[in-house]
Amino acid sequence: MTGGYLRIKRKGKWENIEIEYLTDEEREIVLKDDPRLMQWLHMVCNELVSIDKLLKELEKSGVISKENEKHPNGIGGQNDVF
Image 1 (cartoon, rainbow, N blue to C red):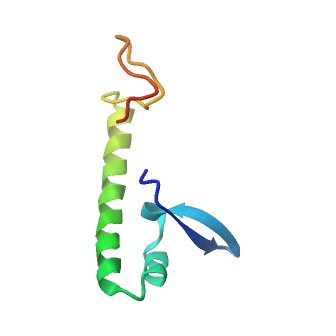
Image 2: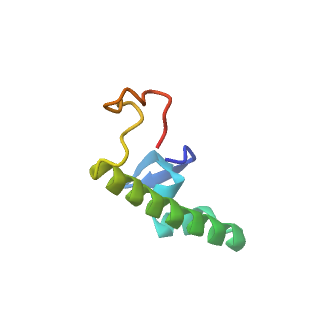
């Protein structure tokens, strides 16, 4: 969702993980040198997770659609973002 990725080692394998999908422990490890930055990023990630849940619910209920789908009245398409 954010496009901000960090390299995180999970189960012995390095992966590119979007910031909002880091676990609390992963965020603490990555940001241990600056507690203020860690607090800020933790808050941002929590907000992004909340927004993602809301968008999924709106999509599920038909209020919005994915950006690559067209609305029945012809509105929408590749460049539209929800």
